[in-house]
Image (tube, rainbow, N blue to C red; front, side):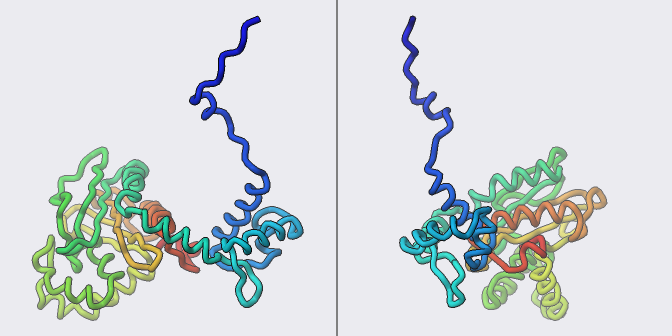
Length: 279
């Protein structure tokens, strides 16, 4: 009878790892609270974690002791000071463009459309990533292109979410950007432009039909961070008439789902995000 060969480190890593069941249960409670995104009573939190209140309570007591949870004035459980500190450490390590990269690739694959990612650079909304569709579009958009805040969907989404003083400063230089607007045009369209930005904030998405490039339609949506500030805009682009460009259409839903996932990863939360389906 021969001895069995010893396990290599690779074999050990491949084996299922046993955890501590009590900690797994504690994790279920924390996950349930994070999913709810609001303070929960003992009964509601236990139910959301799929366990009886009597079983959940000792775990919650320990979480209170170490600061991962605290209780509000109504006695409901919410994130504690240690949880907030750990969350901030995690947020500080996130890179919006790096985290968005897989979503850009997935969007192009799932929609069959070209996808652009833009950030707010020193000259304005700037394209920093472009994932071409299987059939590339012949457009003037390139990495490094700076977009108009008035005449492009990407630019308008940024304009809708930046602070008022930042927007005013950027608009003063809009004529220098792709499809930029003159100061006179901006002044005459001021009321209509403000309404458009309000609509973008309400719907979480904007469209540009055959503008700035004739024959190319664009849908753009924001990615927000934990303060509600815009950090990235993702946009899908396709030939006019080749896809449903309505805000309620499938491409828009796929785009908003991607930006919502990213926004949540960066700590953004809103009471109505589940109902709105977008950011």
